[in-house]
Amino acid sequence: MPEFQRPRGTRDFGPEEMAKRRFVESNMRETASTFGFGEVMTPTFESTDLFIARSGEDIVNEMYAFEDKGGRNIALRPELTASVMRFYVNEMQSLPKPVKVFYFGNMFRYERPQAGRYREFFQFGAELIGAPSIEADAEVIALAMQSIKSLGMDDAVVRIGHLSILQSLFEDIGVPENQQVACRRLIDKQDYDGLKNLLAEISIDNSETLIQIIKIKGGKDAIAQAQELTSAGEDGFTYLADLLNRLEAYGFSNCTVDFGVARGLDYYTGMVFEIDAPSLGAEKQICGGGAYKLADLFGGQEVNSTGYAFGFDRIMLALENSGVEVPSQKLDAYILPIGDSARTAATEILMKLRNAGISSDMDLMGRNMSKAMKYANNIGSQKVIIIGQKELDEKSVTVRDMESGEQELVPISKILDYNFK
Ligand code: HAM
Image (cartoon, rainbow, N blue to C red; front, side, top):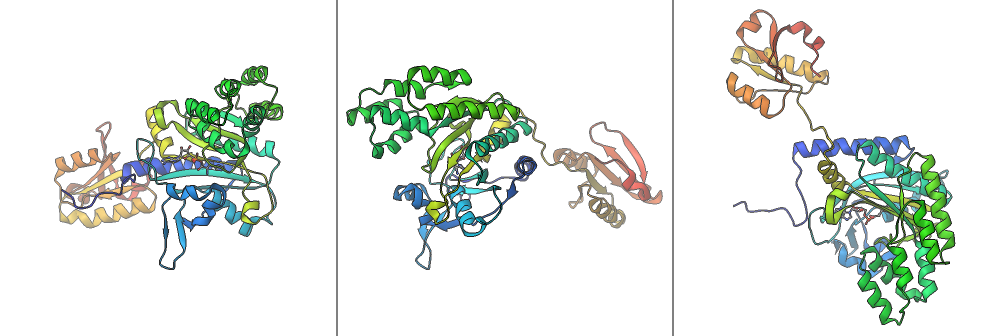
């Protein structure tokens, strides 16, 4: 029985898994770069106050927050939007607008762990700061859609809402301002009974229209359907219709609206969106984002910003579930020197291949031919290079293709001309 276990809600990743994760990460990086976004990195921990500033003291319960040896209140970042906006206010405000940044990193939340929900997890996110809101919203959603598309995930569903619609509906039925956040939280959790109960407690019994509207999802016709039920929220509905048209121009005509998107975090002010991967079941949300204002709260000038974060671990699970091939790392060549006399020549060939960017490895265990073949097969090496006395005499090596079983004698001087890829 091993003495130490991983902390609850954390994971170890082996080389095969890491190769897949790095492949997906670099694919997402590339997509963000083609959209003109540049990468940023901020500290893993921040002063706890940064996260309390918008979300209130309660957020501390959901964080890894502690006092450091100097008595400072520190929290491991639960997300990166607040850090990026702190960075923006401190150092990027004078840059030409818009500022377009993306990030990848580990986040920490004190959650109850379950499939797809961890205490340490990874996000790939983007923030667009300082552009007019509808332009920014369209560009940011388009980047999220393009990221999924280039990964080959075609069953994801994007649902877009607008908080001004919810707010108008709240005002319409008289929900006091100090209860609106609580209502949004319940809507975010799709806890409609909880919402009805809360509204009943504050003597609001005409919540039927609100509940009907937050359940509506669909394309442009869903907007008309909601507007038939209420005269409130007109600006929000018009905004969403305009946004869908813009996304169509980007080539994304499959975006849907969902007036019940309320988001769990408190800083959103306008458009909000989520993306689901239906194959994931309960924790199916792979992305969340929207328009927000944080710069002024952090001592900067007010500025429009829109962003999102993908739950990277959920993307990996979704890709696996939907059968999307993610290449794992493969070794191009495995070199088997037979006998000590072949080892020096084998080492020279090994380094020649490695220097040429051909991934290669050499037997370090003194395996015989049949065990070495089995091992090479096991680690997925494409070719095996055999070098024994006969080969040394002929200044050649035998290259065996592991898939076809074909063997070929290749002169050592021509080894780099051989097609290992
Ligand atoms: P969020 O919705 O809290 O938004 O998180 C974004 C995504 O991170 C979620 O959709 C989910 O896929 C993933 N995620 C969240 N918690 C966990 C967890 N415990 N385990 C695994 N995955 C998780 C934000 O964090 C905002 N900062 C997004 C944003 C950026 N809004 C504007 N800009």
